[in-house]
Length: 304
Length: 234
Ligand SMILES: Nc1ncnc2c1ncn2[C@@H]1O[C@H](COP(=O)(O)OP(=O)(O)O)[C@@H](O)[C@H]1O
Ligand SMILES: [Mg+2]
Image 1 (cartoon, protein in one colour):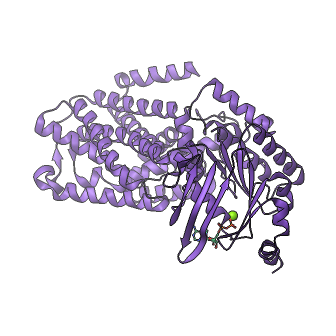
Image 2: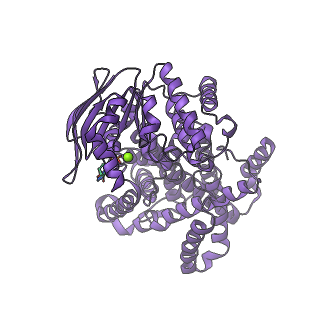
Image 3: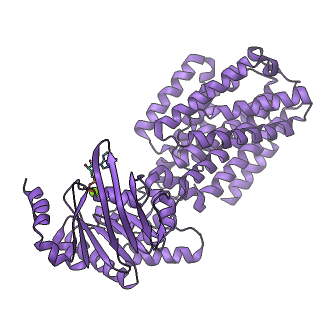
């Protein structure tokens, strides 16, 4: 196992030096989606609080970084990290309010919240230039973006791995299974949900910043797009929500498939994601990971 | 140990519990009986902070529990099981216990295994709780709550829906835990099963306490018979 991981790490680290720019760009998008899906998973997969507004953290990170780069001449790496920190601060405040809601109410509240932020980003023209968007300086080197995305994805997967094999992760799962039961054994569910919410907001903010720099242009519709939330959810559930590897498998396979086949048909693309989420819920509720565990291809461990 | 004072709870005009007061002595086993819908589970939900009471107080060893949150009540030493078990079905039996511990490490795991052994579930430790029988889930829930080392245990219909062998086993466990110094308040439908276990019975009917006393006196109490068996007949 260790050898496989070491070999994979070596390949991914060296790849930008011999792969074409197209492959490098494809992979960095995959890393971004792994980061997003795994982050969503920390909150929604583990605690069961399904967020329909997680793209808000991505958009907040993107705007924070874009403004810091264009107006304060911050280096892009620092600007992206600050994008993550602003997303965390935002989650800290919003969590107080939204996490009192349960089930569908929570999901809807976050959906509404993201729309509200999108409206603010559009209307606050003096700061954000509204619908015109913000143009950033061009990217000199694709490789640095690639490494930033790779690092983010690795960090969030390692974080999830640590969580999953700790008491913390088990307590998140307890909240998902039965919140009243969890409180009955002395778990302060409010505190744990808040922690999950905050942990799940940092990396989307960071990759939002990196993405803004990579694209050299952002506007509210693109970085607060509900379709990005939908992708996080579908990728995570397809691979297996509430597992470490699930969102990685889901994001890698779906980002690849969608890039190779569906991207040529933008509408079909949306339909396929919609159809897939229905199929997953109906036929493989535990996702690919659960399927592999049932067949004994993967071990039944919280570390998977 | 536990003192219930004047506790009341209304649900949209329906008095689920009305001015209920009684005491549970330290290291005793107290039975809480009454026909369906008489307010027994509501009383547990008030003690454990799941519901806010309209008026009245709950004290544990002289300390007020009344306005605490459920997890705080649990941390103060009140363990509770549910009428419909709330085990975590997608966790293994062992994980169900580990998640309740405030620490991690070797000692915690040993304690969990000991408790699983205590309720005869050691061999099923790696089985998902959802795959256990209803009776086994009740035992698992009891073991889980014992992880918190509660002084007072509230068991909601502990004996309902489990087979006779399991019932005997559970009664044995309760007696054993009492010898270790624990106090019990047990909701039970089956008066006969619970009588030999309890030093005291409290009887609820339509949210009111209609009797309290020694099991043999309760058995002869006319009002109780009327409420209890009258209700079962019709
Ligand atoms: N959450 C609730 N909302 C409305 N009514 C409730 C609620 N919980 C209990 N009740 C009502 O309170 C009464 C007592 O219920 P309960 O305490 O569950 O009885 P028991 O456990 O003795 O069978 C019943 O009439 C029940 O319908
Ligand atoms: Mg009841």
